[in-house]
Length: 350
Image (cartoon, rainbow, N blue to C red):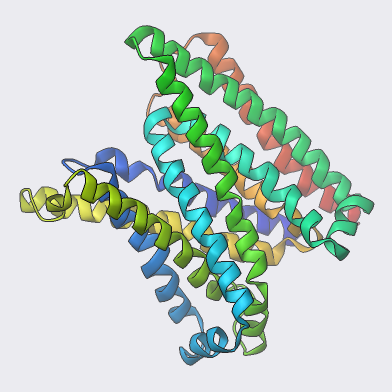
């Protein structure tokens, strides 16, 4: 029981970190979104995965040894799935800019939670699928996910109501809202590929543990490839758009204080984004037979923390009461879905 609760707490820390990663972007000045995102993704997807792996492995040579002895199919598949995830990550950030925290997280992360939890066991089959379909733990996973879907629907309905209210009062076009929703859905689908990348890279984590790497840190080697693939796709997108709009000069133009502030914000945002992966890897080690629910729990907690940021930034301040009621109901239901997993672990292990 304690193990799974600790896993959920670690998921909560990672989710809080991830939901906070978009906040620094709100305070960027005189940088286009793509200039900011390139700095953000360089920190979160390239620099920190390598640096943290170096810090947490007993010997740096283990990193080279694992990467050089892992079969090329595992390496390329993990890198490729990370590459696909990168498009989802960029789209997610763009959708947040267009729709705000609340609606984007409900749509994008909700979609990712559902498909990222259900599809992998059916693709891999074997013991994992059997545990999901034929055990009491599997029942509680499905129950938690069903409750979560209801909660995500309520939060999404509240977010949609907020956006429609904003449109009515600010003469915004329906096409803008529709475009943002489509981007959020696509981002959610593509983001689920990250969970697949972690599973594909599992042989590298197993090899790391065999070499003496702490069980909680073994997945850090997988982040190098999964995040590295995402960095490549983000680099291609941002370089193309920065070139298209001719904003390269923004990296060096402007007064020193403002420029330094922008770089610091990009580093802070990127670090917060990376540490969701770090704590996710640690949390999975404690989830036991509920490991299959890790992705869903992480995503559900992401939605909850994102709505809290939305409230902090007063995204809901002027909304009608019925819209806020849907939000509060959705957050309560989502919290309940996480508690179902904890309860399921309690009754199946006592």
